[in-house]
Structures are given as structure tokens and as C-alpha cells.
Length: 308
Image 1 (cartoon, rainbow, N blue to C red):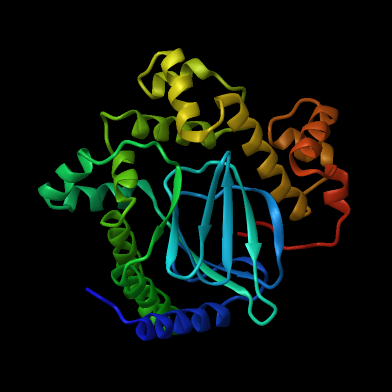
Image 2 (image 1 turned 90 degrees about the horizontal axis):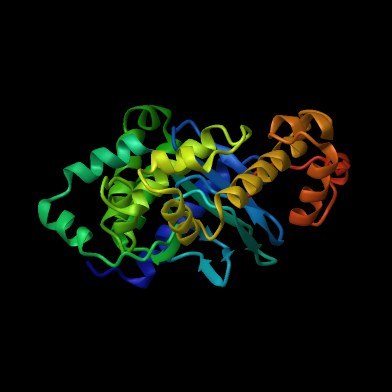
């Protein structure tokens, strides 16, 4: 279905209005709708390490640029990010002098995804099985009028508590359903596949993230993926662009940064919380990754953690 530019502009303006009216602080803003968070940034944020939970990230005003190794991933109005796997990457936020960045993050959970994939027509499932097997953990794709309309319907629920409670879950499923039928939908479907390496690496990542502070056993993760250690290591790096040890270290550091920003304790305590036995090693790794010492982060003026 073709959509006029005027209709798309009107839709994005309305979504921006709804998002801004429900954002109280820069960064992620929780909503009454489970699985929906809103994003607000009022200033430029330079390239910095981040990670996103599996989901769909829409920017209805402003622009984001992601960097994953040599890939540059731009998205703003008219595009959305499919985050199939939670991989650490770097991101830059760009806003204009006249307007803030406004967006929405729709979480994708395994149960909802499995149910939707199972309900797709057999012809679409077969098409997905024959789709290109490029192992991208994240990709920006062009938004269709269908997914824009589904997102607008979801955001409209925020203006009506009864609609949020009764209709919100179904409208979130509608957004995910449209993503499954979109240009990178095959990545989400592969996550549910028992056969492909992509889905098996996804399950190993879920296990790793469930307790990333614990000592890492690559052999155990390979067992979760039903692979040999050498095969698992190769597939893991192909999908995430990191080795399992590098992935664990970055997840620890990113979590530590959240805890430091939230003022949850001293640097030494946070180092132990995320799995470090040496506070000095933690400080070295932190400064190497973020460019500042954790003590500096802990003493910086308080700011909202988790800016998208």
C-alpha cells in the first residue's frame, strides 16, 4: 500500500507529540505498557558504548548512528532498528537546535516471538527458510506504512489508561508482527529456529547474559548451542563481532556504568557486583572502554542512565 508523504509526515508529527508528552527525563522513560519504553534526548551525545535489549527501536524525530566494527547503521524517521541480539556497539545521538530526539523501543520477548512465528503462513515460513543467512545481530531497515501505523496505534494507547491496559499488549504484538514481515524479519525468525547456528548462538547469549558476573565456561555455552567449542567460538564471533570472553567483559562494564550512574555504591562494590575480583583491573578495563575512570563517572553530576 502506497502512502503519501503528507500522511507519513502527519503520522510522525503525531507520534513525536505523544512521545514528548510522556517523557519526563532524558534517556529511557518507562510507560504503563509492558514492553514499551520511550526515548528523549535534548542534546547531542557523541559516539559512546551502549547495548540494546532485543527489540525494535524507532526514532520519530532526530537521528541515531550505530557503529559495529566497520558497519555504520543510520536510522531516523522512515527507518527503524531491528535489534535481533543484544550486542555491545557504539552509538551517536544527533539532534537539531530546534527539536529533541524522540523515539520508542518495543521489546521482543521469546514467548511472543515464538507464538507469532508459529502463526505465520507456511509460505512465509518457507520464504524465511530460504532467505539470505547473513548473521547480522542488528540492522536498520525502511519502515513500511503498515509498521508505522501499528506503532502509532500503540502510542495512542498512552493517552488512554483503559486502552493501554486492554489493547496495549495486542498492539505491541502487531508492531512485532509487522517487523516479522519486514525486510529483516528473517533474522527474528531464525532466532526461533532449532536448526540454524544463528538461533543457537542466540540461546547461548541468553544463558551468558543471565549471569554474566559468574566465571565464564565457553564449553558450557557451546553445550547450550549444541556445538563443538571451536565451532561455537567461530559462530559466536561471526554473529556478535566479539569472542565470548570479550562479550562478557563488555556486558560487565556496561552494567557497571549503569550502576555508577545510578549511584548504587562505591567503585569497589560495583566492580565485585559485575564479576571483577580486582578493583584495579576493573578500573583499567573501564577507562580503556569508556575513556574515563570509574571514579570520575561516580563523581560526575547525576544524569539519567541508559540513554538510547
